[in-house]
Image (tube, rainbow, N blue to C red):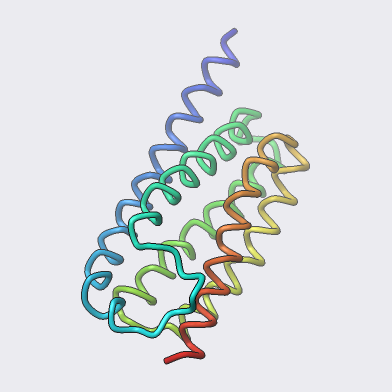
Length: 160
């Protein structure tokens, strides 16, 4: 029972961290959505702006639950520690993409960061799977959304 409580607490902390990173990324995004971003040529499959916040909120919650599950196995374990390092690095890159793309209005460098981010997400999923399969599976929607974001980012670079 004690381990379960620790895991629940770690999931809550991890979700909170992910949501804070998401909120900070949202500030960078909001600064350009109605101005610079609205002036860009976008592909026909570009979703409406309102969809991004709810999708990212759900993804950050899933990511946090996944990280919390892995953390629940104990940080002293080398596989847990390695998996969480990869998770932390990809989370930082996630935030830096928003800053580059929206905050600094640099779609091409943002695309490069996004490609590295995809590699780190795959490595994180691989590492999470070593510790807990459910945690790895919880990261798959995030991976798919970032692939979609990468395609959008690429098309925006192409069209502008």
